[in-house]
Amino acid sequence: MSVSLNQVKQDMASLSLSAASLRLDDLLTEAQVRELTYQEFLYQLLRHEVSSREARQLEKQLKWAAFPEYKTLEQFDLAEQRSLSKRQLNQLKELHWLEQAYNLILLGPPGVGKTHLAVGLGVEAIRQGYKVRFTQMDELIHVLKTQEITRSARTKLNRLTRSDLVIIDDLMFMAIDRREANLFFQLTNKLYGQTPVIITSNKGPEDWGEILGDPAITTAILDRLIHKSEVISLTGDSYRLKHRKTIFGN
Ligand code: ADP
Ligand code: MG
Image (cartoon, rainbow, N blue to C red):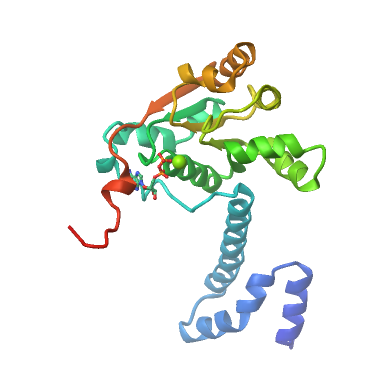
């Protein structure tokens, strides 16, 4: 049977094996040079398709997550953050808390690695197949307020509620008014019990009331966020300050 490479490629195209099809010539040459068995060649070809799909999927999920920066747990230096042990970090990395719908509340002054840790856990969750969405608190409030008016706000909100993990960064960084607190309450109510949330804040929950204004809404929000949660307090000096670049050198 004489089969042209083009026919093979056409069939691969109709099966949507585009990555494998693109590499077909190279892999065939390689198989000849290295004298691979049929089985080894077929495995290599399919492996290539599978790994490029996985890479594409990862990229798509990272885009969906909208992280401000790509940070991993591997880059998180525990020697710089004494309040978290290796065992605790590994436990967090295993994501049982996510499976069991626990919220994580990461507290601490600016620069101690709260956002890094939250993004790192988000990246880990994506690697393990979860859908993650990151938002800054001020952006979230803006989105909640404009959801009736703009399609882009609705899209963002929709992505948030369709995720398996939501990260809200810098909660209570700025004071919010009663209407905003109400909208935020409705969201926490929606996420409560089904979508785990990671919250970072430089203020502890005991101070949230003061910034949220309305004590009744604050209590209701706190109830939902804290009911099933792990609070992690990061301490120490700002990593940014310690590792800052200087003009004069030290
Ligand atoms: P926060 O959110 O607490 O203000 P960030 O997570 O933004 O702090 O950290 C500030 C910078 O310092 C980031 O670039 C982050 O990657 C880095 N950083 C903080 N803590 C660590 C750490 N333990 N290991 C490595 N980098 C860190
Ligand atoms: Mg931060």
